[in-house]
Image (cartoon, rainbow over all chains, first blue to last red; front, side):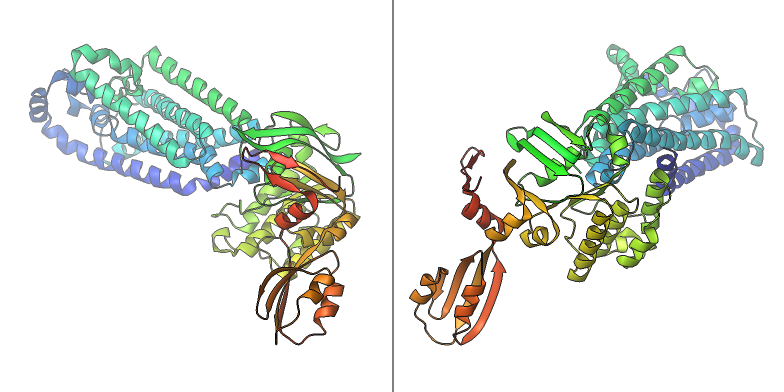
Length: 269
Length: 305
């Protein structure tokens, strides 16, 4: 199994480093410009107050909390309300779609299936390898903020970083597990990407709409984005039990389904 | 003990009966040819043996062990050459070899195989010709010295010289104890290498015999251009069936023994002659009387069984 884990990590190096580089680039840019925003913070807050309350909440903006008062609040809006989600969804879906469906499509799954390994071992090896990459991306991205803050002499709130790392990792793993479920179901990588990204985007749209329309407010409970509220988690250091339950539950549910399907399905390669 | 024991195996894809209640025994030490035209069910049977796909009913035993319930254990002594390119295109040969050695342990015959097939594993798969990809697939299947080799159209993409080396290697490894199950739609290939064979068509085994019986089931197509018009009755009397005739251009079909036909033709002045083996399809129709009905079922009026 260790051979497959090492090989899977090696195969995803390039994809991983591209996502990591982009993620770090955004962090670097946002932290570097934060001090200049801080000086004009109140003007921006006045401007933002003219937007609908629901829309502001959807983007993690709490009018009672000064966005430009601390770097965590600033990043939770600039980077962790949409940009970072796109990045981690991109990496998670890319890894998951190649893990099973991509390999069936390219017929390379034949190499793995002809080896003396249980299908469960192949699945777990790929799961562990890709989870490792997702966790490392989250860890480096989140904790690199501290590094950049030190460079640009920006104050940071250390206890929030661990909580943000847990929440980001859980969010990424939930998306990865969902995509892996589709990957186990189909033999076409394109379908997996389309469905996984499509569902995530629909969730995001539903989350925004739920903030704008009061009668659709409950829609937010059906989206991952409600449970990954960076403004609460990163800026205030509050993480609800629901975040652990929903993401944890999704990871267990979709990963288990993916494993069952992969173990039982016909793989014509 | 049988190396492979298939009993009443069925695999349907919706209404298509890909494998329809087949039974087959491959004895330990056999080089067993699994013949059939494209779409007959050869690859599906192999995928069932390898547990890539799951059967509807029936059983498959490999050296007495159920292939589904014991597949990791079985695959430890099984080598597989797939019919098409299934290699990782961004890897090189060493990456593949290292993956296999990581699972099976260090290969004892790797360098010998690389020499035999004159294969350089340092190049990326993406840059390789189909023949070189085939060489790697063969090296990977043989490098852990399997007790049973399952190969699906093993020589497709290999040049004639490498085909000869491949079969020489198989025969050598067979003498050392390796059982071989190879699918093919090439009658000559099977005839030269195997000691037993089975023919599958439309998901059913229509014949399973010793290779010696295959010698009697040959059909040759002979295209001849005579230098001047000839009397065709001579050929009919000699058992040469005339398939087509156009002035001095004839196509004959000859069964079993070609020597008499060649003797007759040699007495004429010929402008051109071309001899080909008839397709498996023709042989099935001629010797096994297999016809397809409209419902995809097989009407099996075997003459010889």
